[in-house]
Every structure is written in C-alpha cells, then in structure tokens.
Length: 538
Image 1 (tube, rainbow, N blue to C red):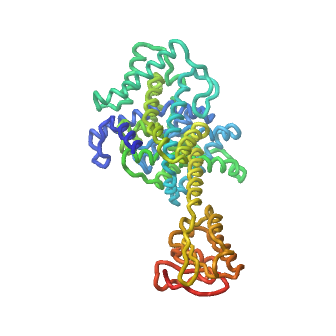
Image 2 (tube, rainbow, N blue to C red; image 1 turned 60 degrees about the vertical axis):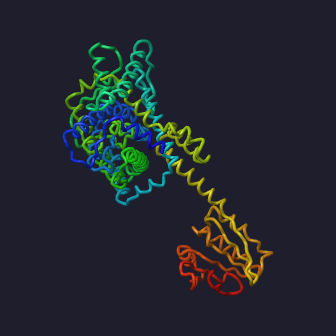
Image 3 (cartoon, rainbow, N blue to C red; image 1 turned 30 degrees about the vertical axis):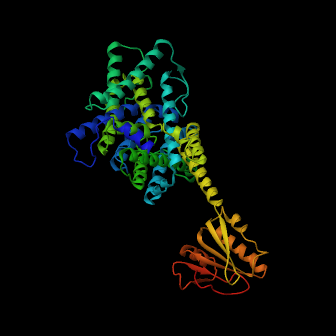
C-alpha cells in the first residue's frame, strides 16, 4: 500500500484525465507534449546504448524510433515507452565485436520471432509468478541503475562506456562541473515546482526548456547533446541482414536471440505491471509480448539494434500525463523528426537538463518505503528485496528477477516442507489413525516418511489426508515407500480422504482406487498391505 501511495503521489503532480474518455483538444495537447518530453529524453539514452553495443549512434536511434512506434501502436499497455536499452546492449556487444553488426541485425529478427511465439502461446501470463518482494527489488535496482547511467554525463566523452553508461572519459571539474550540478539541480527544482504553478506544460518539458534557454542565451559552457554524437540522418532504410543463410549462422545467432528475447520480455512485462499499478489499469501481457516481437522483427530489417520497454521513459510519460497510445506514437515521430530535421537544435540541449529529469525519475521510482518494510516482512522476503536490488545493479534486470523468483520459490518450498506433521488417534477397533497435516510434495516427502512408527503400530493403520494434499510424484513415491514398510512388517495400511486430483495421480500410478460411498467428494485408496478391506467413510 505504501508503494502504491508513493506511485500515486508521483503521478498526481499533473492533472489526470480518464484515458477512456474521448481524445479532446486538452487531452491531445497533454499527450503530444508528453511525447515530446519523452523524445528529448530518448536521444542521449539511445546514443549511449549504441556506444555500449559497439554500433553507430543511428542504429540506436532507429531502434528507439521503430520499437517505440510499433509498441505504441499495438502494445499491451498504453502509456508504456519502448526503445533501445542498456540491458540488451551489454549482451549485444560481444556479438558485434566477434561477428559484426550484420549478425546483430539477424539476431534481432530472430529475437523478435521468438517473442512473437511467446505471445501467441500466451506464456506472458507467467509473469504473475513474480513475487512482490522481487518487484520491490526490481524497482529499487532499476532506480539505482538509472542513477548510475546518468553519472556518465558528468564526464568528458571518450573511451569505453560500461553497461551502466559510467565507463570511459574524464570527470568534469572546476566551473563546468559546478555549472553541470547547478543546472541539474535547477531542472529538478523546476520539475518539482512547475505543477504548483501550471499544468499546461508537463513539468519535465518545462525543466528542459527553461534550462536549455538559459544555457543558450547566456552561452554557458556545459556538455550538450551534440557532444555525444551527431544524430542527423535519413529515414531508416530497409536492409536485409547480410549474413549467410546457413546452419552455422543460426548456431551463432540463436543463443544471443534467446537471451535477448528473454531479457526484453522480462523487462517489458515487469514495466507493464509497474505502469499498470501507477495508472490503476490492467495491461495485456500476451499482447505486449507480440508487440515487442513484431517491433524487434521489423527493427532488424531496418538497421536497428532492437529494444524493449524503458521504465525510465515510461515513468516520464506517466508523470507528464501520457495515458493513451498517442503519447508513445508522438514520442517516436518526434524522435524521427529530430533525426531528419532538428538535429542541430537538439544538439544544443544541455545534458544537465536531461540528467535532472532522470534524477527525478530515480526519486519517483525508488521504493523508499522498502526501508521500513525490511524490518516488518519475513526475513526471507527482506533478503529477496536486497538480493534482487544488488543483482540488478551488478548484472542486469532479467538475471536479478530470475534469481529473486528462484530464491522465493525455494524459500516457499522449504517453509511448506517443514509444515508436514500428523496427529494420531485410535479407533474402537484398535486401528491407529495418522491425520496428516500439511502438503505432501518433494520437499516434505522425507518428513512424511519419518512420521510413522512401523515397528510399534498395530496391524491396521489408517492414513487420513483430509488436512493434506498429495502434490507430485515424489509424494506418490513417499506413500509407496511407507506402504512397502508396513507390507514388509505384515501390516495393512489404508488411505483416506484423498482429493480428486490426488485420486487421478494415484490412478495413473497404477494404484487401486475405490470411491467412498458416503463421502463422494473424496477418494479412498486401499489394499497396500497383506489384508484387504475398505473403511466406510469418515
């Protein structure tokens, strides 16, 4: 609830309009201005990630345009922004270094096809298996990654660039550093204060515009977008990847395509969930998978490096008021306009203004309430939050989420494994009844076996599963092992109150099953021992 309140406060800095309402002039203005703000923030990100991947800047810009446009048109969540991302770029760099950019284009095409298959098979629904502690760690780690990526703007360009954009170059010092810090702080102040004055212009756009005007009018010497690289270019040309159509080529690109597809979908689906939470609207996971796949397939044929959802730009869009597909479409078209017509103007925008916008995104993204949550939630959940945050920063978001899910699943399995126990009773006939409590599965199978006292039990033992569930093959094996012990001791065992799905499991395993006449909701398994008999219901 605290996280939801934080996100709500972050989005409430602008006037919200119901996205299901007709697209009137006021809503259209908000959507277009939001798209313009996002497009301005996309430029340095796309250029930086192109450098990370080892490809020309236009390859990153073309990807941001095509992926952003296609996903805005057919994506599963209006308001989301997609483009070239660092998580994908750090995987691409080794492929480009070893085989060249043409193999990258072929890989992006295959990556897109894989994502389309995932969407058609509706596998995107499995994102619901991501626990809330993993989501908290995801947003916290992502906020830190976005913050670290901006530190590269405080360096004079040059040298290698790391996955977080903090690599080579020389740190600014003296007056340039002071101006950079001052203008960044001014941008953040304007973004904070603008909504208190007017909602006519999105606060991030106001911050960028005012700071850019100050720098241009007064001729302040600070790093600008043009210092990164020239963004001037033409329309993305159709281009078939120039690679041999051989099995060897497939063996080269397939592993990269699978990894890129997985990373792209995990990031996109988690971003979809986060944006859906912020806007209080559900998104279509399978539709988003298909949209990402179509976008990347098209991008590979037009000289782009591929991409996925960008949570930073999505946050900017939501904060600026973007709620419909118009904002995402506008962002892509504005970016194309920058490439074709306005590269000289965009080159004059100070990087400090864009850094200020992203720093505000960091503040809004980080789950500050997680510090108090860590003291209240179970220790395992606290560990998962910290672990996912750390792995996100050290490696990438997809790896962090997978680690978090695995750790959470193992913790859940262990907690359930320790719940298995049994209460014992004796019937008037002298039979001993074991009333099993807790789920019976691979994790609790050993504990189940330890519940029984075969040597001292009477000749008839009844195992009542009314308070348990037989879950998997390990559970069946555990039941068979216990039955075997009683059979070897010359004693009989009868099983009671197995649910219908357990009945089917045991039937498929080849065990004799007899429905209890007076308890039709349950099944009764009998005759594991020397004697045969059916107990009448319970």
